[in-house]
View (cartoon, rainbow, N blue to C red):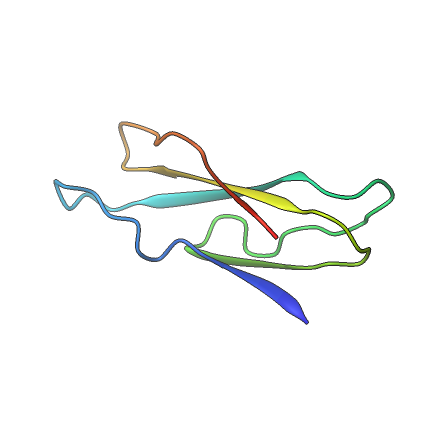
Length: 73
């Protein structure tokens, strides 16, 4: 089953429109997993090998990019 990554709760205090950028920054050696919908508020991937996967989200309001937010599965 796909792992769903949800960045839809991201917000900008000035209410500027946000762009999302997801990266899969760590996965088990030999994994061919890749993110779908990398530029959407919600992205997904399917774990193809047992182990740890770490996804990272960065959000931009048109001027400033957020610090990375990493989540492990």
